[in-house]
Image (cartoon, rainbow, N blue to C red; front, side, top):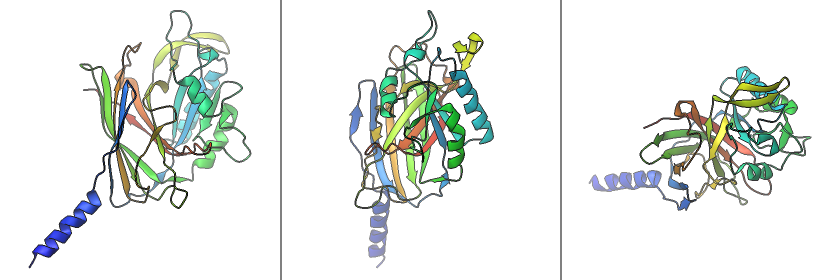
Length: 294
């Protein structure tokens, strides 16, 4: 007589842990896919992270001021402020026989975020704040907008389940998990969320123009070495984003002829979950993870 209850229990377990496998996105060097989708008990909300996507360059005389401001904000709000340094445009033209810190997607990323009339400029959580017409703002406005976010919480928790680099295949790969603590984009106007994944590197020694001239021993931090996802982000395919929804993403990226090859101990992953609808790119949450070599 216990068979019906056992069968019911099995069915309930399957319903809760049912995993859907999404389509693979093959972008040449990259393979990305939503690997599994299921539901579980919702996690607790976390404080939201403030992310500054900073457009910068080695020939930008005012950019070191912005770099120092980011360090100040990170000290003021420990663990709550992240940064992605995107070297692009005229001011990022490398000096002769020096490192080229640019990425090919730089101009498209700047265009996606609305463009800017000058450097340094950065988007804070890809948010258009009250009184601002642009997403990319002068560094002189970053502090107040970061402070505006410090009382906010995030509806999504991000976890890096595994990651690393294999010298045998010259490939980075990993698995990322998103856990929804509260519903996002619910209702009849439901639209998908997107993931943007950066590979960052710290402690890159190269020239940098500063107020006193060229600093030949300048230490560049949170430099975007690769954009793993498409410029617009990777769509997070799921039936909905209810509380308790879990999405796991598999990614693989072949480095190709990357120069210089990253120093992996200085590298981090930066994952950004954001909107992408009607010019609304607002960030839902971002998280940074250490890099592990195989």
